[in-house]
Image (cartoon, rainbow, N blue to C red; front, side, top):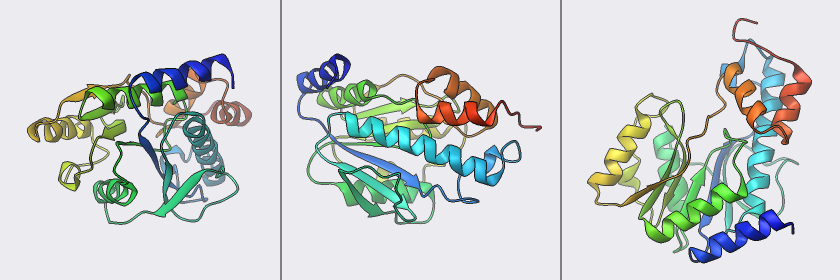
Length: 228
């Protein structure tokens, strides 16, 4: 274990027992993931980028302190899944329902931190920061640059906080925050990150997290634009 990870573990321990972590993801199958990256990238290239993003995300979670690591998956696990994760199937129709069910299905009496597969720049230190935040707050939110959120931590799941929240909108994060505060929850925040949804997002995230699998995959495919 290197010094950085030692520091991360200590940071989390200072804030109390680490939370359980949920990664909600789709199987990185061609034609089913990252469709907004096309036509700049082919469907196969978009799936390859999705797999690289998922691998980076799972690696960060595997390296971070956690009570339990859960993958809420739409699809079938592949060789990209490291050891140490409990896999549960996603349930529900819209993303709001699937998020609510993921919290309920992963609940084991400990705080929960949920992230998606779209922020491969996430680090163990950021996840440790979420753990510390839940020691001081009822909820922790990681805002996304598109107006949504890339992380949601809750001391205790409550489906009413998520069901009916409009997803993939510029005001998604604002609606979620209103829900949390109206429920009387004290909310802490993490740094703003960019979800990888568009070719421009892919280039930006790869430049900021140059050492990961996602950045390597973007470099291997070369620069692309939405008009490519």
